[in-house]
Amino acid sequence: MIDLVQTADSPADITTAGVRLRRVVDETDFKIAEVLGVFETWAARLGARELDAIPGVPFLRLWLRRGTLEPILARELGSAALQGGWTADGRAQLKPFPVGVVGHWPAGNIEIQPLLSMTCALLGGNAALVRIPSGLVEVTRRLIQLLADSDPERSVLSKLHFTVFEHTQQDLLQAMAESVDGAMIWGGKEAVLNVRSLPFPHWARLAVFGPRISVAAMDAATWSDPQQHATWCQRIARDVWQFDQQACSSPQTLLLEKREGQSIDGFVSALRRAFAAENQAHPRLTIPAALTSAICQARASWLLDDTAHQALFPPGPDWTLLVGRGAVIPQPTQGKTLTVLEVDNLFDPVAKFDGNVQTLGLAIADPEKEVKLAELAARRGVDRIVKLGRMHVFIPPWDGADLIRPMVRMVRHVVSKE
Image (cartoon, rainbow, N blue to C red; front, side, top):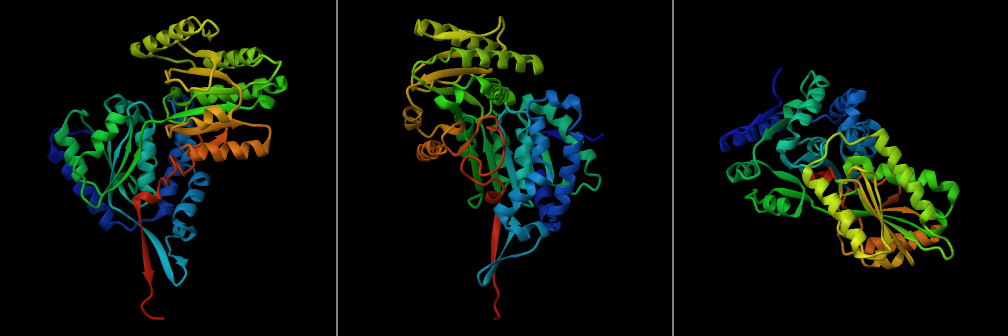
């Protein structure tokens, strides 16, 4: 069996891979139906029960299906793109063509991100040069072997090169940047800035998805209905559990709008039960020592900061609810640590958003109120406003931008003879 993830020992290893990938793009007639067929087969192979333990795999399986991707392609590239044709645009016609080789710098804390990122480039007809973070090598090998099994003609696999090297190897990073025509960059502030500073060709297109947080919010009429506690709390727990709360779309804070004469304690108790049930269904198998320390510190600090604060958690570091009041969003702890804040109204905290909030998950009973809140959130930098329980539904635009079109050249052809 060929190892599909190669260790790069020198810049020449990267350069050679880039040259090969560019040749494949130049010499291959791109057929989107072929790619979608391979992805559909791959999605089916990802349905093995044992793979569900890998964070994000159930989501990746849904993403790869035709029913998900075809509407996205039609919206971003035009309906004719699905048949490989030109889309009429007045007297002209438009057709997507690849930019060439797209480099991928995924974050090291989301298991499926290298694969999710590369699919966006492949759907535009590009080749993908993917740097795998060292901590994700084994899980990536396991998942792309299933892709290889789904692609006997190598129509997709021939456009892929997975490489491993340390983020401190600046010469290899530079060689990778010089070898691509576009880049999709994910991760924390330091990692993003480092990659953006690399010597990309002047024509290279960069799509950057930096570090952001997400917030959930419920109005008084919704959370105060005891008949709905179990349903909403289950949805919140599932949003927290996916990706182990490390994705930008993971809720770190839950805002509960105050209802005069009614305590939030009943809802918080239901949320505690939902967290315990989700933890039993999807227990954490391992936890880094640094995260355990951060969770313990967050619990202690929260209780010491204000005697009115509550902290609900099991004996171990599996999950934590930090309960209090106020409109200031605290710094996230992650590790399935959700801060629950009672606020006088939802508009005050949303008005304080500073562009760092990516997704706002809502449960609002009044449609008119939700429209006003969504408008305010959008003006304050929020890119995705969704229903609670669907905060990770990965449908572009993502971070306010398309996912496939940025790595595609939309060629415009005006017929010379009328």
